[in-house]
Length: 590
Ligand code: GCB
Image (cartoon, rainbow, N blue to C red; front, top):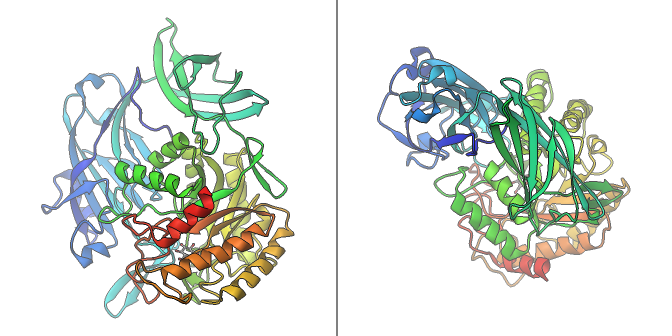
């Protein structure tokens, strides 16, 4: 799906702002037809935002079920005769959308966009009511999974991932217009041959016959290559490569040309020319070994929760630059497309992850131990879950396939992977990813419970991504033992002959907590912990990356393991550096 754009032939209108908002604890809104008129009550909600922390009420913060959003928008009168589309960048975790009284869309999955052609349901120049019922309940049929449990105080939502289940309309909503004959998809695959770059392109069209013409321009707007036909390969002599730290982008314009030679539609795509390859234990970008330095992150801020915000976006990237990070993982769900576009521009490398987190009943919310369920069974994660998961992989790749910053797909975080059931569940999902994108490596993130020799899923990955907490969850406070045990485990993984990225290692640290001796939770311990881990990485050749958990402290479910959120950040939640941030800066910037 192409992002809405303003071009010579297209126009977009952002619907962000204050929308009417109503919770529906009795689940009556759908049958009562709340979309037929103004929503009950007078509450307003910001879009984009997670609704949870905006309202000062615990019952709202922890609410699960249907939540309704509504706005009235005037369709631009200049759009007469055009194709008009309603696009939602995310509705967490699923939604149904009405325009007026007509249902126009339904979507499962909280972090990928969806849209509907609403041309027949709107009149340019007139107002139209848009109603969205978002549902944030997690079950064994959703990605991520969860369960609603009966407790002495009523039904409670339970889930096994260690971040707060923020929900709502987290990203922008758009109305946009395109010509009836339009570009419906665009795919590029880039290559390098010495100093010459290649851009293979495929343009898909809808709405009638038109010829395709493409133009590639450099960052100064000078034309460097042209092509015609729905697919082809452009060559660029003396190409300026996209590379880590050098986010050089070309502009590819795909034009549909009608019988008279007039432009029927025009769409622009930023293109970074680079290659990605796994060779032995090396991860190569443009043929050169790349070492990942950075973080697992979260979309997480006070008040707005998981909402996208441009000031926070720029600030977070400034901090990545300050600390010397060259990469991050979109733990544990697809981030806003604005994040990927910024990574492209900044030359920051991204491991792009689906929302499949918590598929592991041996672990939950940072706590090891039985969660009272079997992970894979007809009643829990089953064939239906697997199809939802497959669709999540397809939608992630369809959305992000053209971003040069994305170099690796992560199809799950810390699922159960040591059982036959896990092997059977995941084998086809790797095929789904490779079919959707034959050009990038694919992997999943392995948890400590499935070490080398026990894990039955890592055989399918091109890269080994390991989350390890030696010196925190195991060997707590004993960094000497941690160093020994971690190295021993990595020696085992090294025999697989694949690159190893340590996708998580970290220690909760309460800012301002100090200790002369290396005591867990102190700022000194966080530094000592990181240094211990780094000694291990530096001594294992197959290790090609280190992503500290986490970039910043973040909100999660409350419990005996967490003090006001997860405190493993190098930065606090409001982005102030802990002492460890300075230590990382010294290591990464030299
Ligand atoms: C993990 C998870 C991450 C948690 C982290 C922790 O392994 O992947 O989501 O937040 O551990 O802090 O326990």
